[in-house]
Length: 183
Image (cartoon, rainbow, N blue to C red; front, side, top):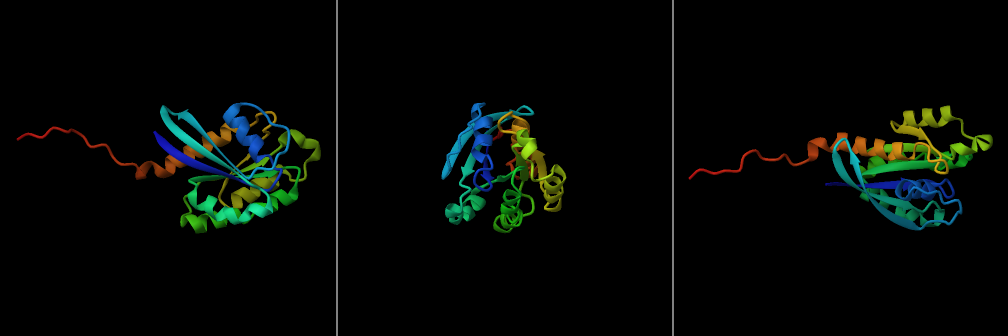
């Protein structure tokens, strides 16, 4: 079974924990309790293959930014979450794609941008087209989601697993054929 570490990043209050808990436990947590760091594990089956996914839900507060490089180095893939109700939250993730690629020393690192809280359409500050065009400009996949209504939650994680599988297919050890030795 392959294991992937997915790191969830974004500013405080954008719904990173709610999004992650919705995926792991199929429930919405509506209270805001600032996260320092939470780690979740889930077995996922996709296209007949099993994966162990380790999801690191990170702190969004400025006081924990010193830990960010450690998160970036250890992750295999990244979810960059902002709230559609906050333009500032999109700005807070704007430098992350380049930071990730510099620290990982590769452009082949799956990064998915998630505009969360689509259930709060009446409070929208970031148009879908803005999030989508920014994600495209930094070569990232884009989704809008609602952790509350479970919109695009599974789809985001399945997409990132597919991207990881595509990138790392050539890295897997090949099974040797045969195994008999004639003496």
